[in-house]
Image 1 (cartoon, rainbow, N blue to C red):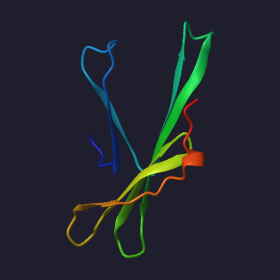
Image 2 (cartoon, rainbow, N blue to C red; image 1 turned 90 degrees about the horizontal axis):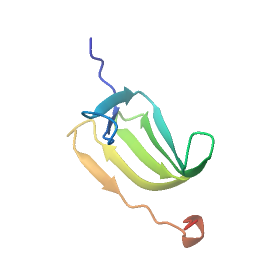
Image 3 (cartoon, rainbow, N blue to C red; image 1 turned 45 degrees about the vertical axis):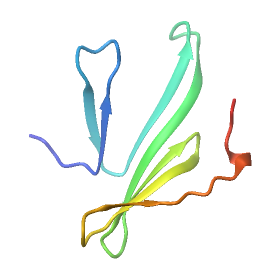
Length: 97
């Protein structure tokens, strides 16, 4: 039985014959590691998607990259349309490491 989830992740990788997917209610987080093996791997990037329902019924989604919110949108209860929200990034928060 399928359940409706506000966050839906579709994953494609060369190791899968097809794509994989899963849903989450409030938060989905991924840590990407790089290296030569499971024993010799290092955190490369972490990303997280969050969802919350506001008091007026709108839904807010945020996407974080290494702990910094880089994208945000609202889905309004009335029109059920996506409204992108501007994120002003402080250059000191963005890492090139």
